[in-house]
Length: 128
Image (cartoon, rainbow, N blue to C red; front, side, top):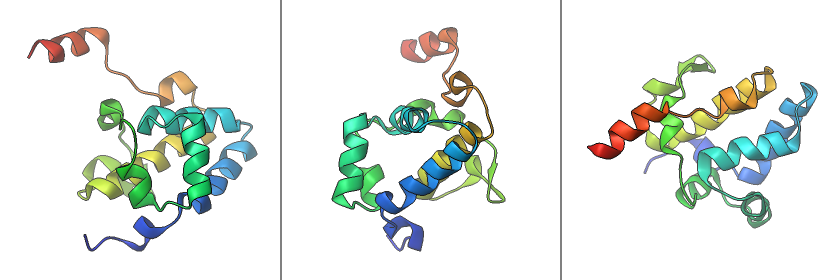
């Protein structure tokens, strides 16, 4: 993979930036961790281990225990780019996380940030 420079950025370098952003807006580390857990399937301990290990973003997302299938419901613009139109799968995952952190920092309810499909849509998709 050619990759972008951001792919090699350490998660440990990005996490404090996200944390500072959400805390400036009155949100908590626990809420940030909930967002990361929802998206990636990491536990709180897993997030801390990723920070300690120095894994880069490519490895962080590759090692994610369970990337949330509802992430495809994330839409909108981050840094002038529509996340749903990002072609590179890894870059799209990074933009998804950026978008969720932005929404959290803007004061959106956590229940709205952590998207889910309506129950009837989930039931129909399981029947196929």
